[in-house]
Amino acid sequence: MALTEADLLRQFPLLLPQNRTKTVYEGFISAQGRDFHLRILLPEDLQMKNARLLCSWRLKTILNGYHQIVEQRMQHAPDLKSFMIELKMILEVALKNRQELCVQPPPSQFYSVLIEEIGTLGWDKLVYVDTCFSTIKVKAEDSSGREHLITVKLKAKHPAESPDCFVDFPVPFSVSWTPQVKRCKAGRVDSSLYSGETKQSSLISIHSQFLAALESLKAFWDVMDEIDEKTWVLEPQKPTRSATARRIALGNNASINVEVDPRHPTMLPECCFLGADHVVKPLGIKLSRNMHLWDPEYSLLQNLKDVLEIDFPTRTILEKSDFTMDCGICYAYQLDGAIPDQVCNNSQCGQPFHKICLYEWLRGLLTSRQSFNIIFGECPYCSKPITLKMSGRKP
Image (tube, rainbow, N blue to C red; front, top):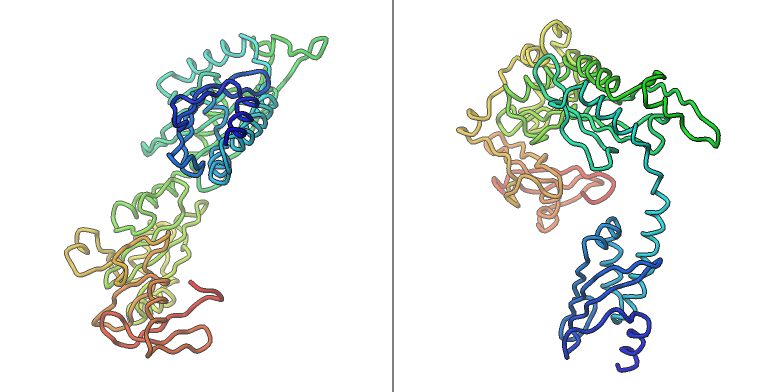
């Protein structure tokens, strides 16, 4: 033990114990000529797997993205000295990667022109800008009054390079960017690049392209908003603007999943019925029989009503009925991202189950039997026959 402590002090002379039991160490770890403050709390048995590492703000920033590997090394290190050696190696890698990412700051004209562009665009449209002016978030409204955000990440060679733009769209969004770079001797960028003497794309042009893209998707979002407002959407529970699918409750523990084409939102979507056969089969027949009645001039929801010959019940109506969403075995709705999509075909029951829950239930029954990939058993609720079709592997 004394030898290990001596080795620790020799390799990390700036890290010292703070109490007699040596369960608290505080000091500095050095890497690439820089010192970083840290504090390590050890349990009474001095085992690293139960230790805590407290980093200074600067060290925590540099190790951002390496937390998982640091935690892993702490769990497997036999002693503090071994962990500190590995932590120093991780820190040196992190510092090296940060140096490779560091670039020369742009000239002052870069900031002044960018601020001028934001002013022209309107400061009320600016949602966020980081301290380096490399990440900017701007908002815009479509003609229906919906608010949307675009995140613009400027690259090191901006404006010679096209920035990365991130939006919540159901289709790809790419920016048309036309840089015009003049260079002086020694390869430096001419200051006229920032002075307006040359014409190149800007934040204003990005915002204009963003607005145009919003209007091209207006009809799609109108369709999705009508579904969200006038039906009970089971999934997704909090849909994003990029989500193209909706699972809509139909009653009788049945639902329909529609996948809408963002480019042609009023055309017939892909439809998948979920529920007991005696409920969903008639709906499938109506869909096939009435498909010719689909009229793109009407909204998607109105067409679904006409083709399926139903009215979509609202959440208020369904909640007052005996409509059940939760699994009849685990009594939860979401289970590892899965929803109850297996339903008892007994018209007097119709209880939904998660596939994995029903699989485990049927496996535990002595009366269950399996033929190829289908398990035959009894419903946990009504004891009537129920079947579960499995994929190639366990659900």
